[in-house]
Amino acid sequence: MVVFYQACLIRLIDELNIKDCPCSQNKQCHATHLEPLIESLTESLIFINEQYKDFFDLESNLPRTCEDYHRANIQKRIKEILQNLIQISISDRLLHVMLHPLMDFVQQKKAAYSFNDKRFLYQWLQHLENNWMFVFDANDSSVEFCKQLIEWNLNSLETIDFFIDFITEKYQLEDTKEDQLQVLRYFQKCFKQHVVVNKTGYQINKPSLKETLINWVVQEIIYIESTCHINDRNELITQPDDSTEKVKTNLSVAQLGCFIRLCIDSGIFPEKKKKQLITVFAENFSTTNRDNLSYGSLKNHQYHPENSAVDKLKSIVFKQLKLLQENNF
Image 1: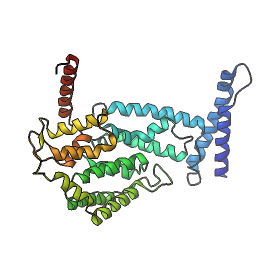
Image 2 (image 1 turned 45 degrees about the horizontal axis):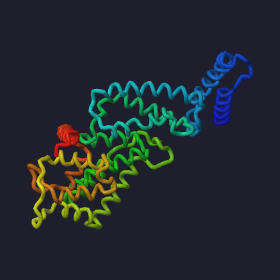
Image 3 (image 1 turned 60 degrees about the horizontal axis):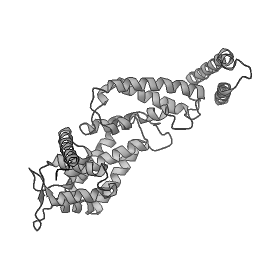
Image 4 (image 1 turned 90 degrees about the horizontal axis):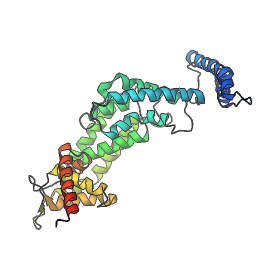
């Protein structure tokens, strides 16, 4: 009976919400007669949800009028969160991972949202509002970052992709196979230690974030243990070539990594040749303070350029632009 009345109330609320009155006072009539009825039916639906939680179908869709109400409310609270983040240094991608379930709801990315979606969104929103210390740079606090998202089971593709990129970048910075395995096993240990608070998760019918990440790390460990490909590549890249004199640049390693990123993003070199380009620079260039460059170091500085390196590249680009304008060659 609970499921029956739940479905009937949702259907009635949606029908009344889109019903057009044929009279000339359309809007006024809707506000006077239909909106109070919609509000009364919604209160009955809320009562059923609160009194019969074990029988209420969380996978059924919210009435559209309720969805619009929650969308406006969540959008307002997101703005307050962003205002609190103004003084905190946080990467754009980390910010996206934290807020993307809420932003997707505000932008109505799905055709319809369920009661389970609403429950998760409000719980995650409340967690963000109550735990400002949770907001940090993932490079400095990777363990805490893993813990928060795994506990709350934010098992979306965006979160999974972020973790995979983050862990891959971390372990590929290591020069030996043994060191790479040590990094992966460390992440594996961290994942296993975390307790999932929200077992339903953001994607209700998909494996938990914890399960997905553990399985991925295990596969990476198996792959590295069965092949020396990654280790051989790193050794090859970092091995100095005595037969060829390297080109010395006045840039530091951080500045050179930023320069490579600039060349790729501005279209000088194709994106699909990124690995090959970093390899060429690592094997054939030296900097003011380092004769032998590693692939991992250049790649890391490319993805996470230092502010001082960006400022140095800006001054160089401005100088180049001035030379071009004056045609002073």
